[in-house]
Length: 426
Image (cartoon, rainbow, N blue to C red; front, side, top):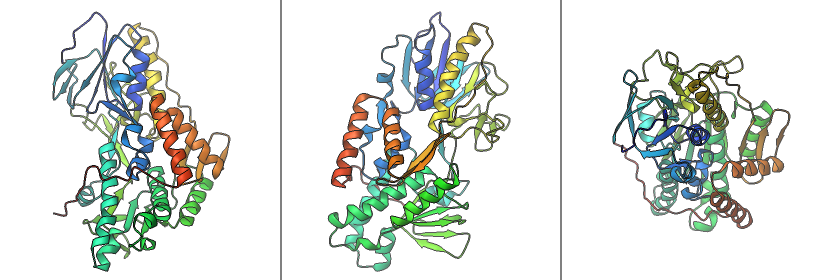
């Protein structure tokens, strides 16, 4: 990898998400050699991926070069690499571009879509966990309407204009709201010779309410907002199969659709060498103690979505969201320094800053520690928070200008089929 050994301890970080970047920024001014490995050369602001999928933003608005984030730190190194295995005995990371020894290793590899073992759904549905996946979904949505114009088969046209979103969490709810706004404000202008009133948007939730991680009031208001936008919300319903055309459920209810978006859960993205049963917990996450150390190791850590740190408040592990990841990264930066200096490390304590979700124009729900509110004010709070956490002044300005333009013109100019996507039904 052409990284010279120095007298400084080497810390290798696997993953350039919220946790990995927070840790790298914390450590890179110290007397350490910090090496960050990621299969992409950019950090993705995942909470806004749905806006890329629906043409509200271009991908470069929510991505930022990792090298630029840490360009001023002389002891920082980034390598574009796929990490294939961790050799815990020889303290080596094995990648597609070579091997690298470490003194301290931090797994921040994030999460991936969880299909719960259903191979048919995995093959035929659309995920929205990465920028390429979001661009594929954007292309498919737009191509569906182009194809609907060309077919005289009413059943096929219905399937092309029928969208099923599985999962009533923030991702599913926000995507459904965005699609509903496209149906109402954009499709009639773009496709005047197509009866866009027949577009159907369905959200399927296996539990008894959407946004189950938020308060009951937020869940109910979010459902009300969706229904006012014309979205069909199905609760206590579980999807069992999808062959690319027909969605079957645990009841006699079926959906004919060319587009099934799977937003029903995520699981830890483990790597060979740290994927054995004694490391991995439910959800395919790595079990860690209060110092983020993987159980059984003093010098190997895990933070962010991949880490399962339990507590009385979170017996199944911290939520797989940005805030826990950022806080863990910053805390671990301090603890690694203490560990090197042979001082006592500090236990991690999660500061819950709340949760929020937007359901289209002027509609959002916000749960803070002391306050819970919904509607227009919540929408402004949601926008401010997301702008604040975007990396880079340019990204903030581009997103802000896009949002203002979209709001004033009721438009989404990024509805471009840049890279055509065709599903395979074989």
